[in-house]
Amino acid sequence: MHVPDGFLDAPTSLATAGVAAAGIAIALRGARREVDDRIAPLAGLVATFVFATQMLNFPVAGGTSGHLMGGALAAVLVGPYTGLLCLTVVLAVQSLLFADGGITALGTNVVLMGVVTVVAGYVAFRGVQLVLPRRLSMVAPAAAIGALVSVVLSAATFVGLYAVGGAVPIPLDTLLTAMVGVHTLIGVGEAVITFLVVASIVSVRPDLVHGARRVLDVRTLETRVAA
Amino acid sequence: MGAPHGHRLHFHGHSPLHRAPAHLKVAALVTFMLVVVATPAAWVPAFVAYAVVLAALVALSGVPVGYLARRMVVETPVLVFAALLPFVATGPEVEVLGLGLSEPGLVAAGALVTKATLGVLASLLLAATTDPRDLLAGLERLRVPTQLVQIMGFMIRYLDVVTDELRRMKTARESRGFTARDPRHWPVVAKSAGALFIRSFERGERVHLAMISRGYDGSAPQGARR
Image 1 (tube, rainbow over the protein chains, first blue to last red):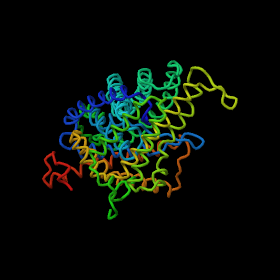
Image 2: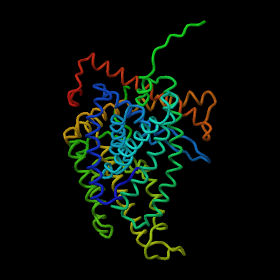
Image 3: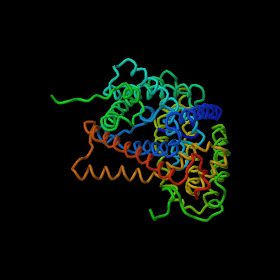
Image 4: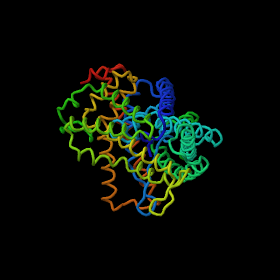
């Protein structure tokens, strides 16, 4: 759920907007290295993809369903800098054109669902990738762990922001337990879906997956001759 | 694609609010909402005043109230959360219909619902009265980085193309007798998402090549493409 207007007080909203702006500035520089001058059309289409996958319902049970947040998925697919730009644009469009997420909470939402999920997801992904063998089949599991970490850390960050600028006296330990508990479950769902999506792309077009580049680089061309 | 290219929330009109420059509307929305958010929960008359201002703007815009009201459903999760607050918050309790509810929780829930409703209504009004192209130009005038505005421009332009693609995949799945009912069906839905990524990425590459062949040098200003 997107943070609405009035959930956090004005100073906290402005502070998170500052953090979000700094993150976007870094991403704008870094993205040029990831996708060179193709950035506007490519990031635009990937942002549209992230927006569309958030509309894709994954049924859970009894008529309820969930959808991807997509931070870790975007980071693995197109790289963390471009991924953050995509998530930022998705959140801005949702706020400005669909009234989903408050306009004063846009900075907060970019920090929670953009900066934290992308950075945490990508760092966890790279960390796991360093440990696992360098094989194409290992990209999707690493992405799944990145997705799980990203959702749980995002929830924990929310509780942290709430401790600073929350408008309701909820006992923090209760909130932390509830948020992290619920989001561990959501995170498992996010991990499974991220795993399935990344695995399906890696099996068809591994060259498009940013997180698979290092694996593809070490592969050498071999010519097999039938005996 | 011969239909009007407004996004789904845009309500075509010629009111003073429709004609006002987009950058002023965005700046006004942000200022208004910052003031609303900064207002203490106890200042009820102030919130009444905000609501009156907003109602006057809605009347001025000529956007039907029912049109905006139907689109207020995006607020539902906030209302659910607000309804939980009196039960989980601490502090002195009051008896309501035989239930012990936290008083600060009730106040906070009321303030949250009020502020969030004002926010959703104000944002909907901006979306209803502003053409997406004007919005992009307005954001550029507000010094939002050009790259970001360009990405947003592509996203808005291809939103319907990509969501239609998603809908066609769903139709194709269902015409083959598939309906997703529980987590066992996730692999199929996830493959659709994967296919959608590949198609979106390739579409991005094709669009980029088409732009280069028309002289794009990486810095086409938004205003020049109208």
